[in-house]
Length: 150
Picture 1 (spheres, rainbow, N blue to C red):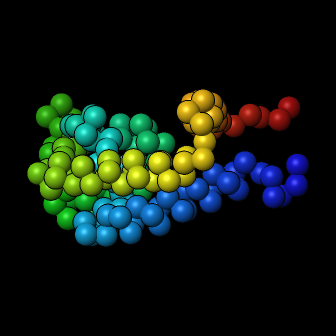
Picture 2 (picture 1 turned 90 degrees about the vertical axis):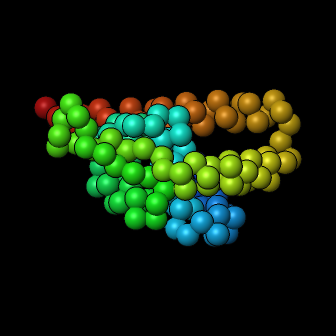
């Protein structure tokens, strides 16, 4: 397989193009465009701690912490001390976070329709299934401890 055929190359391109698209579509909402995955996660799992959010998204804890701080400063989320573990914070969507969700979902639907416009419904389902399997395999690869050479 030559360098033009690497799967990661196309996944990386899609990621960058989608990020740019979302930035343009969500420009009215400040810097939320690059952080919308955190808001979508909190929509489904409000009140999680930062570690749970990191694990769910497959993002390191430091990045999650910085992202949540930005979202909190912008008024999209609020953090509260965890009553069971006073060292940890639980994160909740604030009113502004709830308010921006329809725009985020609309932009995602628009992007998905744009990039899959020439695929049949069956091709979309196959692609979605394959990408899900690749993501699960990748998550397993980074969570497995490194192997020791004997």
